[in-house]
Image (tube, rainbow, N blue to C red; front, side, top):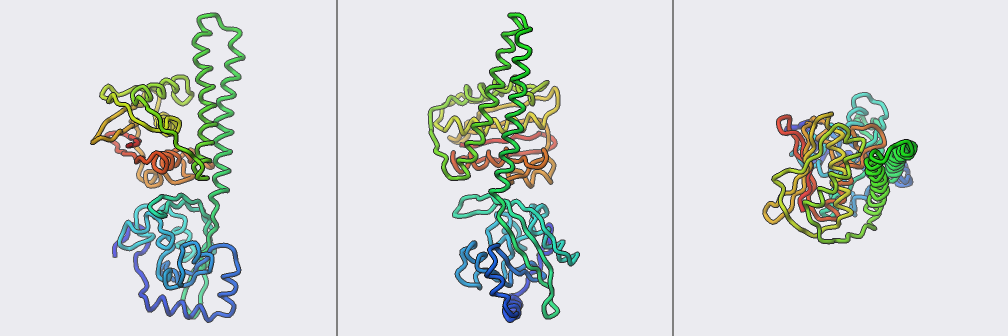
Length: 372
């Protein structure tokens, strides 16, 4: 079998069973394994599960050991990329950025315990679930066969709190600092200058409101508490408002925001608060990816009785970043960032019932879009 990353070779059914029976004979192994609260498995040299503790069995909803034996970790938890290639977990292009695969391979190669963080997108009952986990791969040998004890801890809540606090306080403080500077200068301005400053001040207030609303929406969405409130929306008017809101935004400085002349005039029903948040993230990302003098274009299209709202910029997303877009906690902007594209995905698809995606090429630039 071919692979685009890790070795695709797999152990046969008999070899898996032999390993399982051999490990089961180790004194107290099952008692120790099942007494720990973290999820643990033992992998053979082909990264396949040959032993699992009770917590792992419960997590993957396996009633019997045979249901999980022989699977690789990504296959057992239904990672959306584990089945992209015939070779299974570890063999797709996406897998080269997976902490699970990399920790296992590094442990096998070096013979040293390896710990790594990993972002996982898995499918549960046709819904996509995003996880942040910390994995540890520890090599050991038994009866002259090399194995890996593989355990993981779900750190989704911990990462979520850290990221939200980082983004919330960072972005809110930036807007508050700008507002403070606005008031410091206001008294020294003449009547004509004050008119322009009032617009800038209103924009800063709107930015602060947007940050607060963003955190509330994401928290409600992840706690399954978000209620969708659909209302009639004029699509063209809607994106015009968003473009105007960025007029005095720091990230839009010396950049152009325009509405495509080919935009459709259409009314539709959706939740304006949620949809606004999605498009604001798209515009903000596009502006951050653009240089001075470049243009970001918003567009409305009606295609096969569906509505497509898109945001385009001239920059190209390299392949190694493209593979990780929409991953929870992934960001090119540094640590404890990375809720922008993730929030687009979860809000747009799980709550508005749309499709959120993007296209990118060196020739045409990058377009993020939502189809409703």
